[in-house]
Amino acid sequence: GEDVEQSLFLSVREGDSSVINCTYTDSSSTYLYWYKQEPGAGLQLLTYIFSNMDMKQDQRLTVLLNKKDKHLSLRIADTQTGDSAIYFCAESPGSGNTPLVFGKGTRLSVIA
Amino acid sequence: GAGVSQSPSNKVTEKGKDVELRCDPISGHTALYWYRQRLGQGLEFLIYFQGNSAPDKSGLPSDRFSAERTGESVSTLTIQRTQQEDSAVYLCASSFDGSIGGTQYFGPGTRLLVL
Image (tube, rainbow over all chains, first blue to last red; front, side, top):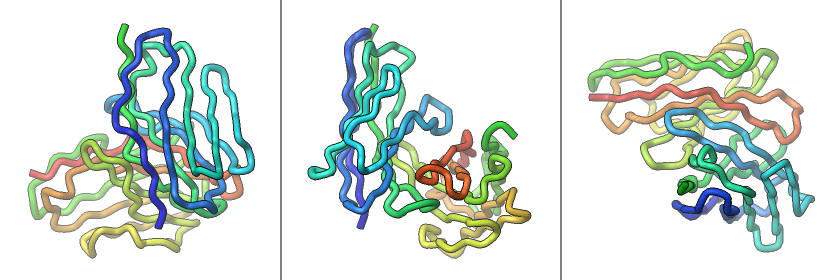
């Protein structure tokens, strides 16, 4: 079955880069996503990457995908206190409209 | 509307009562999903609608849980005879059929507390 694993906690200093890692098991995953959840709020789509790409950059966010190792990472450059949140990695096992499989989330704490 | 909306935002109920949670998807989105998030956990898939039909109900935890969708729009998740373990945030998401990766956009959730 599908499984997505993430480390639970990450703490960084303001201005440093944050790297959040994720591993997944379904090699047929077509899309991989990063969602952000701030306290008391729903999930906000941050970015996604198609499985035939190995990197995607969007402003301060860089997504790296190693399909061979089934490893996904999210790098946040110049981390700010407003980036403190829980970050969820998710895979889309099929194509089109299928339920996502989520990791348990990584809680990012940014120290001023 | 501009985004996915859910109501109520918070619900406190007594064990054994029934509750109804509502989701209004983004206009034009044909797919709708319900997930559950227990405290400190990731998201657990419950049910998915394509139009008004539910091709995948595999995540519903028990027969106390049911959902319907009408008019390819609003969906209601009903939990009968609530139990304390039903306490969680219930999140709804919608996606536009054929969009890139079926990207799902989430509502703010309904926080359910069963006493």
